[in-house]
Length: 163
Image (cartoon, rainbow, N blue to C red):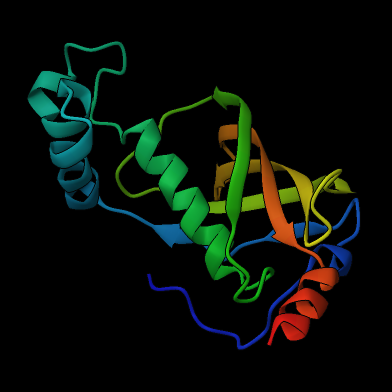
């Protein structure tokens, strides 16, 4: 799941409040869940079906951290930001609604809530987006709000002037 290059940079001014982003689906299997968990979240419910039976989930589930990272990858692969780097300036209101299971296919829907220029740096601004990760059958897994720092079109002028 590598990010396709678009050759396009998008700037803060290219987006509008209310605009939505919908991603393609991404499916994961048991081995992907266990492999991630063994490295980053080695808890019983993520690494072993038998041990998972004794947890509140009663079966193997994916790590919430893995779900969050898949969310980021799906947003990047949506190409809606082109090749503009997504610089996180904030991350809040994270809610884990439902676990991710082996065999689930995930999709992400995001809505732009706010766009504002930086108060002290003309070459960038901030964008708040509400992000929902759900299964393709509609089960909401995670909701969250991201604040992203994006370049403005003034950054192009500043870069050109410095050369």
